[in-house]
Image (cartoon, rainbow, N blue to C red; front, side, top):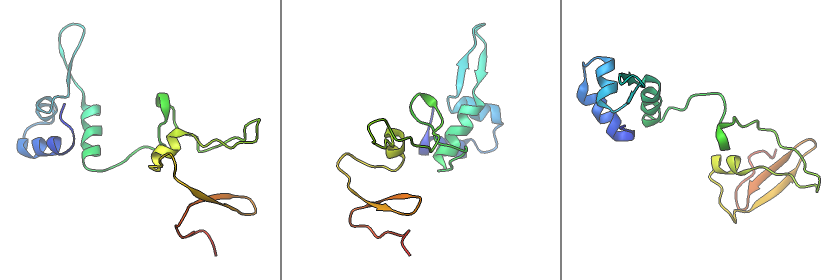
Length: 120
């Protein structure tokens, strides 16, 4: 199955071909139990949107395909765990440092050395 720039190039190359032929030529085909052919339009269109840099869907997906809730709970030991799925979304790495900014009803984490856009 083609992805990224290869997928975009193939779609351009096929130009006026029918949708089914484009999906087939890009490799989005699987074999049914009876030996017939199944065109995977959904996977094709998702790959096409991804190749064009378009993100769709209401929420992000964490480990195991679960949707992220964007809710954190204070643990029994008092720690507030954010989780790997969230740090991955923000491209955070082990060792990244943040200043903790406490507001009346909020906590802001500001990367060390960055300007805090939330302050007034």
